[in-house]
Length: 191
Image (cartoon, rainbow, N blue to C red; front, side, top):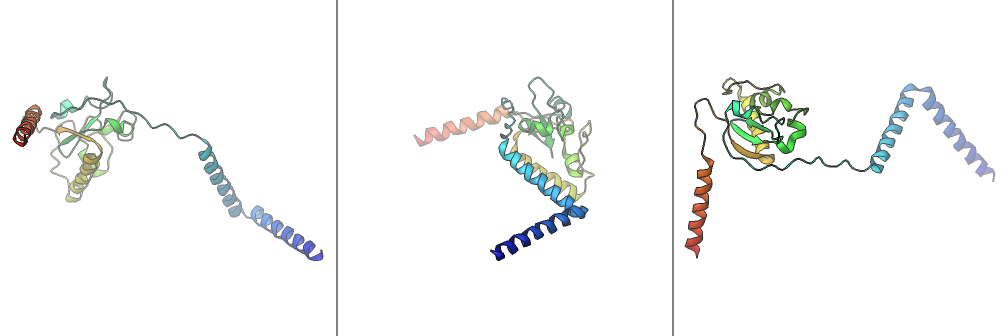
């Protein structure tokens, strides 16, 4: 019994010493407060339901080339909310990334524009109002643009090309007809 009293007294002394250390040291007090805050946030996040995934409106696919002027209205403020942007001469439909590229988004300055220069220089400002040939970019900046382009190819729907001044647009309906004609020919040969 005497040993139990000694153990109890020793553990009380240990707890009292610990509390005394925490209270008298501002660094320890701050660490205890930080730990308490983190534990609170962990338990709070487990009790709250997950936020719903933001839905975006499914729009019909478009396939065409754009001039810089024709691209500008597709900044997410139009009636259908479609957002297009160009990277390295290719136009992508980034509507499903509206929280980034749409009005109020982090990269809203790129919506309806050629984002190549901004992506190359890590600058989120609207691109030039006329065609930008990117000829003054360094090798590293062009490599950065190409890396961004690869990411856009993986995530977003390719729409067409960004046309240079005087360049004629591609007639994509001819390509679709040729593709289906080739499919029909191969089907008839196999039958």
